[in-house]
Image 1 (cartoon, rainbow, N blue to C red):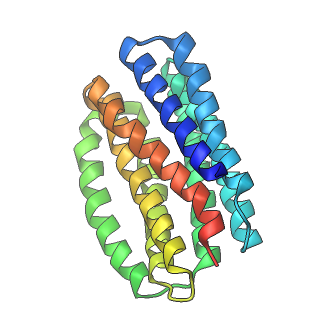
Image 2: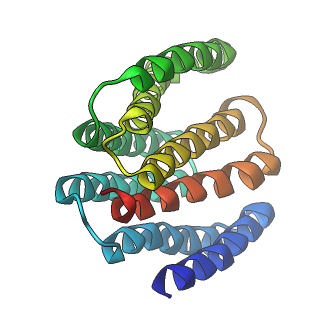
Amino acid sequence: MINFLIIVVAVILLAGLLYFERTDQLKGKLPVKTVLSCLFIVTALVQPHPVAGFYYIMLTGLFFCLGGDVFLALPGQRMFFFGLVFFLLGHVFYVIGFFYLAHINPGTWMATLAALIVSGAVFFWLRPHLGAMLIPVAAYIIVISVMVIGAGTVLGDAGVNSTGRLAVLAGAVCFYVSDLFVARDRFLELQFVNRLIGLPLYYGGQFVLAFSVGLIQ
């Protein structure tokens, strides 16, 4: 019941956030986004914790992502940089959590190949538009790619519950794809459609990762 209520409230808050993004109302966007991001932390807190180490590592990552959400909701290049750093740290903890949970297996190498191809293409797509943000964005792409590789490792580890494995992969991939829309919005074309697609993907990914702490056995 609690998980159902969380999903309902999250959908309502997300709809509100998209409205404030569409109308460019910072006074509405910042509190709604903060509450929505706090909700994915609450989601992790109320799940069972069959693997305590994985739970605490992922929870730390979620807290960093909350900070990243707040910074990205604020205007200015400096706030964007701080948001990038906090999300990078969040990804680092996700990477630690995934490799804490699973052992290297063929899924690791398949995910590595996919990440090299896709992330290489993304970097060359963005590179002409990055300017002074070239190095921070390159570092971010590397870390988020390693996160996807970690999720592929979890998927390929037969010792992990199948539902949990799929949740980890789905959450990581949604997060990765959502960041493509953040990058497009920031460096190529500032359009509401980037947030219309990217925000549901991002929050969907974060909530699935938060639920995954209770699905891993």
